[in-house]
Amino acid sequence: MREQLDERLYRTTAPNGLAVLTEHLPGLRSAAVGVWVRTASAHEPRELMGAAHLLEHMVFKGTERRSAKEIAMALEIRGGSLDAFTSRDHTSYQAHVLDADLPLAVDILTDLVLRPLLRDSDLALERNVVLEEIKAVDDAPDDLVFDLFSSRLWPDHPYGYSILGTPTTVSSITAADLKGFHRAGYYPGNCVITAAGNVDHDRLLADLDRQGWFADATARPAVPAVGVTPAARGVVEFVPRETAQAHLVWGTDTFDARDDRRYPLAIVTNVFGGGMSSRLFQRVREELGLAYGVYAFQQYYRGTGLVGVYVGTQTATADQAKDAVLAEYRRLATDGLSHEELEGGKQQLKGQLMLALENPASRMNRLAGFVLSDDRYRKLDDVLAAIDRVGSEEAAAVTTEFFVPERLSLLELGGEPRPT
Image (cartoon, rainbow, N blue to C red):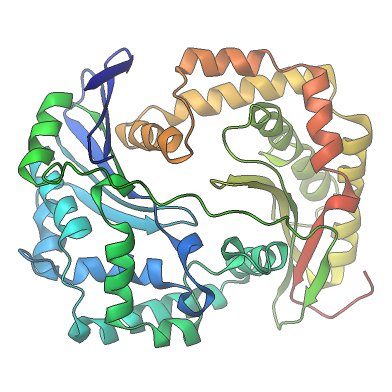
């Protein structure tokens, strides 16, 4: 049954559990379409860490009807693009094509998700590719520090695992492991398909029907979200390494994406470290000249969230940078935001949301986001109104809960060990 959620925005949930959402954007000659699988790194046992990501690579090595080269060329030679990524909670396969090529994109994405070969003969080569990817992250401390931080924040939970895996775990994963992982998660009821641009909802449903997405009407429920254990708080760890800079990440767990506190948290995070006008940028970079990169970030998973700060600085000035960041944390937790900062933060967040929806790929991702987080759909005007309703009390509540230094964990990578 087709359900209209907004102007030109429709949702159909098939009897087998597959959710299909489309948004027609007038005036465009392109379309973005994606398949999200609700199985990813959070569903891996520790000994198979990296399996979801390796599987994402392996589906591109060949399907029942296409070779790896045919997959690579099919859309690219028509001006389109094909991409994929693995996150903690889901794996995504996406295409951006001319509107006339949308049926072809659906065909190829279906091949990748439902009909990969996963041959033993391909695994050795692709495993080596992933091992090179792991080495690339190991050579990039500003990336590696986030993996290390997550592993300390959730030491006994898959949210703390490396999405890429480790050389040991990746080297031990077999084709049989990947086929088992595929059977357990890559089925229609565990998928969400979204498209935005010059798309017609009923035509997309017909394309999906021809590709077999509705062949089995038996409802098979989606893989449930992984339960979350409390994060480690107040942990401070130094990881020695020969680097030109010290890389520091502070952070703490928050809440999942369905929580209405995400609006005041986003406003506070923007004001604190969301750009050149933020407190951290102005103090740490502009006034003290201690860093090129300094910013606040936030992330949501199906069961929890994360907010924190990154700074990269010379090893000789790491203590000074640490003191400056913690001073800003204390000031924020104690004094909160001024009225001007709160109002400016609201406008900044609204502008970011609206500008992010200026292309079909962003719209496609937005459609998938609320379904994957088990949330209800909110019209853009309703979201903007919710942001406008954020008051000083709501902003103060998140600053005093999530920005107090005593709650934060800290991971420092590089330089010489120093007293903490």
